[in-house]
Length: 205
Image (cartoon, rainbow, N blue to C red):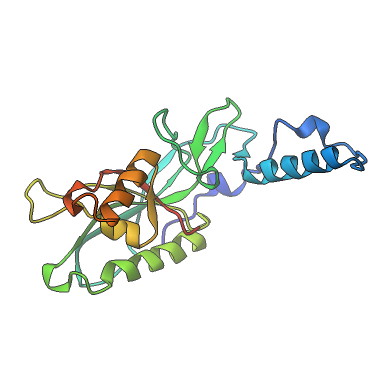
C-alpha cells in the first residue's frame, strides 16, 4: 500500500458553480422555469470540483500491490494535482479546478509500464490486474481513477501497441479523435496496428 499523504488529508474542498448566485429559493411554477431548474441541477452535478487552494503536485509514490509472476514488468504510482495540460481533456470526475482557475487532475493511480510474459499472454492477467488496481485506487482515496499512456513498449513489431487490450479493460482515450479511430479499428475498417497511441483513463469509475 502507498503511504498516506497527510498534506492532502486536511484539504477541505467545496464545489462551486457559476450558477451559485441563482440558487436562492425560487418558486419554479412555470414550465420554462422548471426546465431551467433541471438544467442547472444537471450542470452542477457534472462540473469539476473547485478547490479553495493550490495543492502541491505529488508524483512518484510507487505502488507494489500487484504481485503476479505472469508479469515481467508492472509499475504504477500515486499521483495527485498535476496539471491537466492544454491539449488534454479528461472527464470532469478526473478534474478539479484550483483557486487560480487551472484544471488539475484529482488523485489517481498512474500505470506507467506493463509487460506480460509471452507464455501468459491473452489469459486474463492484465484484466485481473486492472480490477485489482481499481480497488487499490478506491482504497487510497483516488475513487477508482487510473491513467496510463498507451504506446509501444519497444520499437520492434513483436510488441504491438496495447491500446486494444486497454480498451477492452475499460480505458478510453483523453483525445476524442483517438476514440473515433479506435472504433474504426474495432469495426474492422482499420487494421489493429492502426490503433492510436496516447493518454487513456479508466472510464468505469
